[in-house]
Image 1 (cartoon, rainbow, N blue to C red):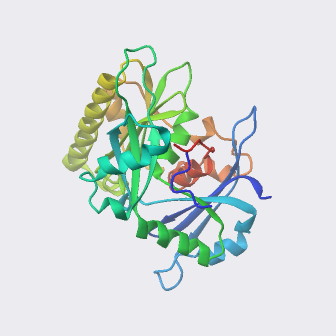
Image 2: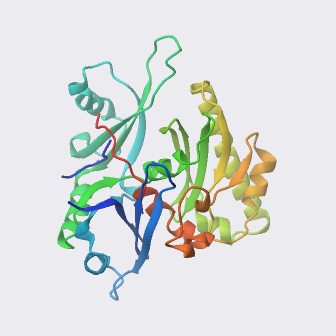
Amino acid sequence: MGLFTKDKRTAGWMSIVLHDDGARAAHILRGPNAKPSVEWIASYPLNKSGDEMPLEKMAKELRANRYACTTLLASSEYQLLSVEAPTVPQEELKTAIRWRLKDMLDFRVDDATIDVLDVPFDKDAPARTHSMYVAAARNQVIEQRQTLFNDAKIPLKVIDIPDLAQRNISVLLESDGRGVALLSFDASGGLLTVTYAGELYLSRRIDVTLTQITKASGEEKIALFEKITLELQRSLDHFDRQYHFISVAALQLAPLGGVHTGLADYLASNLYLPVESFNFETILDLAKVPELKATDLQQRYFFALGAALRLEEKVL
């Protein structure tokens, strides 16, 4: 599926992810029998005015017109909603989904750009309804992002969302036919995803930011850790009830910026799942960018790398 897709370049995806302090980019190549290779990464701070993204500079220096380019919406720019899949012909799916979204969005459904991600169900279970994820963003947000990249002469092919960028990473961690839970934190908060057989089954936001985790101490830190643990327990319990045919192997905790926070140890002591600290070295070839072995850079480029790991998907 190409979320918010617009429509002979260099192979692989180039991602450009916008942040409050500037933009980060990555290019990844996938081979048939090897780890995906990170070809390069790049970071560009805001322009001197402090309010303009340096996209024109990126376009020129990175020769962006050679690539298939993707970017991500910020968490505040879209809603990801779980809905019951309507029993309608394929060609009527999005119309039926729009009808169901009427009372679920915080803006008019007529002003929304939507895309749909199917959530596979247990084929051995009795026939029943199943869920779909629907990503919805205001038309104005999509148009503004397209204009921003067009003005910089960057050929933007896809506007994606962080949930699927994280899914792309989580899928590479799967093994032995079991699911993987992946938990990351950044300036906008926490994101928990669960994947199985290459599919996204669960996505949940946690209202705790990376800054809160790294700066807190004493009782404040314990309170944050308790909040995170409770959210994880609720989400994973819900997942177990809804998808009992999937066994989750572990909770992978994404890098938190090179600072030892104690969160991994706390979660390991309070969750029933094994907790492992995730490192990109286990799933990506970093030979061309050895600086990415540093966990602070892995945190900074987490979503840029996830977006650049994109694979083309069929559109529903």
